[in-house]
Image 1 (cartoon, rainbow, N blue to C red):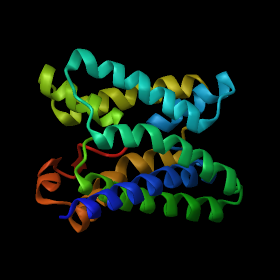
Image 2 (image 1 turned 180 degrees about the vertical axis):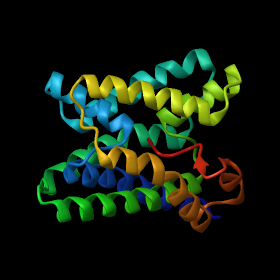
Image 3 (image 1 turned 45 degrees about the horizontal axis):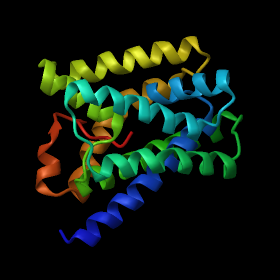
Image 4 (image 1 turned 90 degrees about the horizontal axis):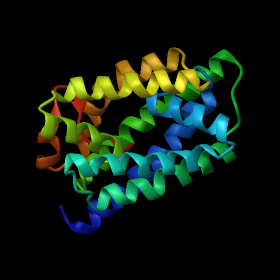
Length: 208
C-alpha cells in the first residue's frame, strides 16, 4: 500500500475514533473503561475530557519505558489527536436524554469506532499508548494478550467508577461488541501484517 494511502487512513481513522468517543459519551448510557476513567478524572480536575485523554496518554507512555516498548509514528499521532477531536465532538454534539436517541447515538458511535479502528490499525503505524501497554505486558512479562487487556481495563474501569465516571449498558456493549466488529472492519482496510497482529476477535492495536 502506498505511504500516502496509509497516512490518509491513519488521519481519517484517528479523527473518526475521537469523534466516535464523543458520540458514545453524549449517548449517556456508559462508555468504554478508559473513557470511564477519563470522565472521572475530568470531573475531579475540571479539565476537559480531551485534555485528560491526552495527559493520560502521556502517563501511559511513561509506563512503556520499563516494558521497553518503543513508540512509533502512529503512537505519537494517536496521543496528539484523539483528545482534541473528542473535545471537538463533545462541543458540537448535543447530550442525549431520550432512550431511543441514546441508543442510536451510542450504536452510531460504536460502529464508527469499529470502522475507525480498522482504518487506524490497518495503516500499520503502531499501537496507541494504551494498547502498547497491553502489548508490553504481553511481550516482557509473558502475559497473554487477553489477560493483560482484561487486567488493565478492569483496573481503569474500577478507578473511573470510583471517581464518578459513567458505567452502564454502553460499557458492557462496548466490551462485548468492539472486538467482533473490528474483526469485520480490519480486513477491509488492513495490510497483511496488521491483520496478522490480531488475536482471535480482539485486535491488539486499537487506537486508544
